[in-house]
Length: 128
Image 1 (cartoon, rainbow, N blue to C red):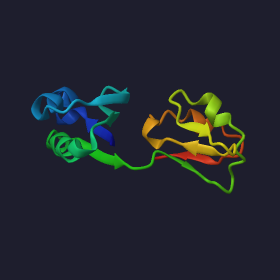
Image 2: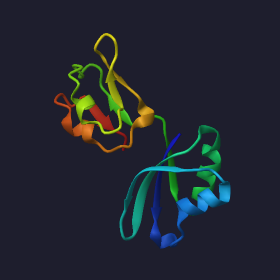
Image 3: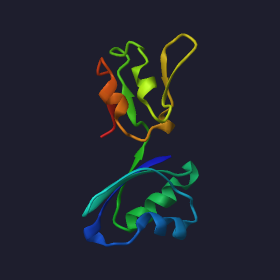
C-alpha cells in the first residue's frame, strides 16, 4: 500500500521513517521524497497487512499520513490512447492492452507528474 507521509521538523528531528522500521519491524520502501529545511513529504510503500501499524507509528511521531488508493487519474473521455504517457513514465505505470488501449498499474506510480505534463489532451491528473 502506498502512503503519503507529510511531516514538520518543528515537531522534532527524529528520523521517523528509520524509527518506524525499527519499532515495527516492517520494511518500508521509500519511492519518492521531498525534504526541505522545515518540512517534507515522502511517498512510501508498505505491505498491505502492515499499513495500519505503520500509519499509527508515523502518526505517533506527529506525521500526517494519507493512504493512496489511486495516484494518477485518467479521464477516459479525454484520453485518445496516444501512448505519450507510456514513453515518458519512468515507472512503467502505463501500457497498451491487446486492443491498443491504455492500461494503468497504479501500484507502480511514484507521483512524479511527468505523465501529466506530457499528456497532449490533459487527460491525466495527479493525486493532490
